[in-house]
Image (tube, rainbow, N blue to C red; front, side, top):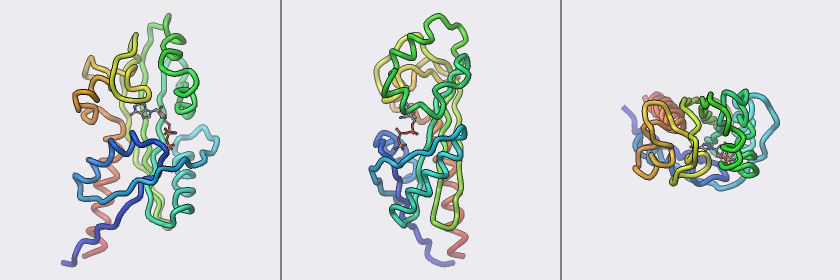
Length: 195
Ligand code: ITT
């Protein structure tokens, strides 16, 4: 049996909150990662997968190293999936208070998060998905970042924000699910390469 080569993987994003959440999961699997904080241009597409794939291609083109990127969407049922692929823009413009206002008379409060991790080493491009369903809260709580204060995942009454303060967001997190899938796959290919 050969020596396992733990190649570094570069996580490219403008959002350090994402990296803070994924780094313990990667480390847990023995994956060494580096954070490259840049904003990658996003293509306009209905599909979060197409956006993620294109983002991974730009990241690889920029760094010429094995990269992972993440694209997320927050989908509100009664708004037909809005903000979806516009989540980042909507957070910066409407914000949590604006979204709550938009939804104040709505009884159907179902919402979900999707995380797509795209791996790109210049030859292989692979995506990994995590989805967490839940509801939009009536008011914003403390804790977390982005939509964390207004999203209550299923099987708890706390928001991602409150869970984050208790170090329990990862138990429910869409990001945890996608990065966990990626990590298991990556470890497998590294092991296969060395046998
Ligand atoms: P990149 O540079 O990695 O693209 P970004 O913040 O622009 O960073 P996205 O395009 O994936 O990321 O946008 C998704 C938005 O959804 C993000 O900016 C947050 O506002 C929100 N979001 C995603 N995951 C979240 C989480 O775990 N908790 C709260 N909000 C989240």
